[in-house]
Image (tube, rainbow, N blue to C red; front, side):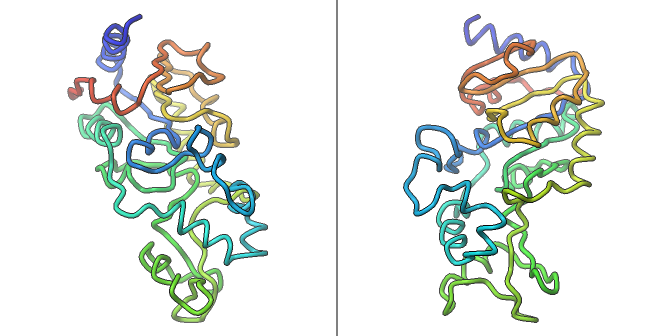
Length: 250
């Protein structure tokens, strides 16, 4: 099919659906200037003292929080990032009563910034941070400002405890309540749109097995292991795809 024919088929699926869930990954935010991990220019192909996967693990955070925060501030806190066409289209789909939830592996908060209300953040968010000792909460600005402190680490104003981002690091478990909500949304959806993810990060990618609806749609620049199971596959920019969709209410 040509791109125009693919968009027409996506439009047909959208128009006939009443409960759409979107499951997305890093590719949704690359058009907002946030790098993914595995593409040619992704974080795994950049030079650091340790592999990024090692740095953003819980054991590394506990062992060397200074190096963790050096990487974290440089690569995972993206100043002035704004929602792109994909984020905006998904928020409009929810407002139109078509999209019931966004399930995201991203930690940038851009779905909410675009206006999405029902968002399950499987891997947490850089926008939330908490003291590991007393639980006091801090925003992303506090983490950024703390790089000028004597030891460059963010410490709690109340008890001086170390502050940790509310993100799920490697070796940590996903939040049970978030997972439960995502599974419930996916299970009752009649259409599941998967976008901007290679579907290789587990356990998050395993959640799509709970989908038993009518239409499975894959929107990704490269092939995924689930392409063969999809009703429609479009290998292109997700922002380009979704901004061509006419979003009408139920």
